[in-house]
Image (cartoon, rainbow, N blue to C red; front, side, top):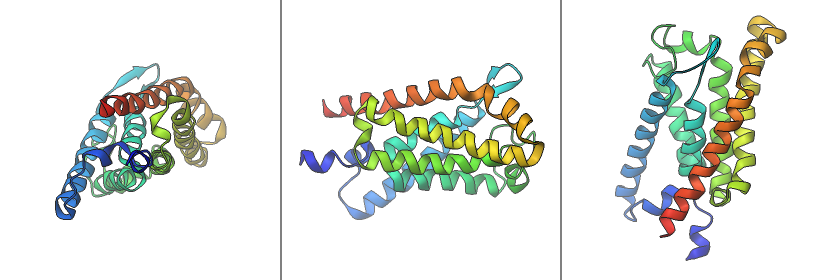
Amino acid sequence: MATAISVRPLISGVLPDNRAARLLTQFGLVVAGTLLLTLAAKAKVVLGPVDLYLGNLAVLVIAGAFGLRLGLATVLLYMAEGAMGFPVFQSTPEKGIGLAYMMGTTGGYLAGLVLAAAIVGWAADRGFDRSVLKLFPFHLAGAAVVLACGFAWLAVLMGPDKAWQFGVAPFLLPDLVKAGLAATVLPAAWALYRR
């Protein structure tokens, strides 16, 4: 029994055994995850000329807790909500909504969130979410992928120098801190669950 639990994400421990109830619970978790992502995106932490974005912190925690399938489903539903025009992203509806917003300056970061969810969810499915030291590299990789995708998209829109100056450099230290914080949350939750 301990072996089976050690290779499943945290959320699997609270899912019902009944198939219909399990699917309904998973659907509810995905919807709740999109609400958490929306709240995180709307939270503003002013950091000089740019706001500190908490959505990637939420993605790291959700993907780590939910695993690959549910974590990815949550982020993809969140993206679909945004594409349909729901004001779920940071600075929506003030700076536009829907696909027009997604194709703007934040488009690369949004794509990176999907990849980050896949990386961290994959790690959680393999039991890396039990240890800060094992999980942190995956959270760091997820945060780096978000920044890399954001940089690539911004470089197309405004050139690589400005993309680095405004889209990556201000976020390096904060994203390192967020990756570390997210990597401590899940092992702590596992410790509580085992009690």
